[in-house]
Image 1 (cartoon, rainbow, N blue to C red):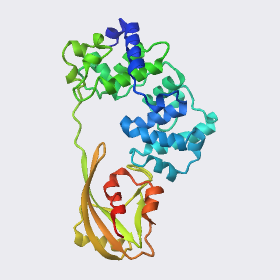
Image 2: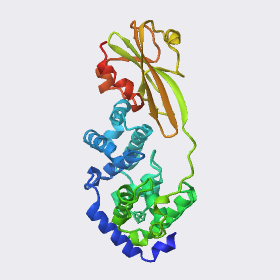
Image 3: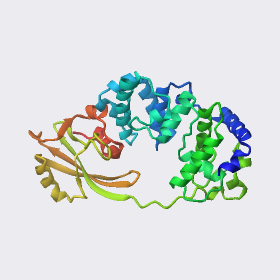
Image 4: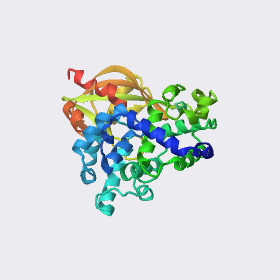
Length: 356
Ligand code: SF4
């Protein structure tokens, strides 16, 4: 893989960087960013589309403009800034890392990849991206876009999710990195993957600045690459989600600190699609006296390896005296204060439409 590109690496670098200079999308984290801004953008962009990240990034940077502010922000408030963005452990790890950066590095992000990698939530990709983009270090940042571009260029038809292919892509990119502008070079490869060498078998090779090196293109294989081992199907989990309303407030409970959606607030739920005649029993176990119940629409939420298939119920209840683990919040508090994950958006959106 490495050899075939190395032959004319200077020309490859120039053509890719010239294309990047003329075609890169204008994004807020590319406008003379501080290392902190690079870090925030790279974490937000993990498994998340640029268009989704844009408003979150601007809001976050406006209100949490530095490592110092991030280290001091209460977790509850931080999760509210992340609400709807998903993969919430990213935000929690950033806060942990910010505390360490304050303690160990006086509030400035370290510039070395190896040191960055000691911080929570910073893996090889993010460390390489911060080191190269924010500090100009000659290091690689290999994400899914870069892997797709490189396996097409090298016509590599092995399983692109394998460690072996990823390591070879890393070596090939490392060999191609220019002495100057390594950060721009990494971003150019990613930008090429995001805007030209598109996923789903539809690369726009006619607009590609590195077409002359692309063996996938010359062999007519580009649209069949990358090859990915078929994924195991997602696990389906059925749940019954309850909007329990008492005196204008709704019950929320906090999810556990580990695992999926850590420490976020959710509407109480039970495993499985409970038939309505069982609802009164579950309310009793929660110490809730039910006055009325209405069946709500079904909702589905898809995570990476899991799908929630949810049945919903609206319960009108007496204001309970003792409901351990529940918090009662009105609509405004749920909107403004408590972070409820997007998985529940279909039910959360109903709150404002309810005449209760
Ligand atoms: Fe991707 Fe086509 Fe460019 Fe090859 S020529 S890198 S397949 S866009």
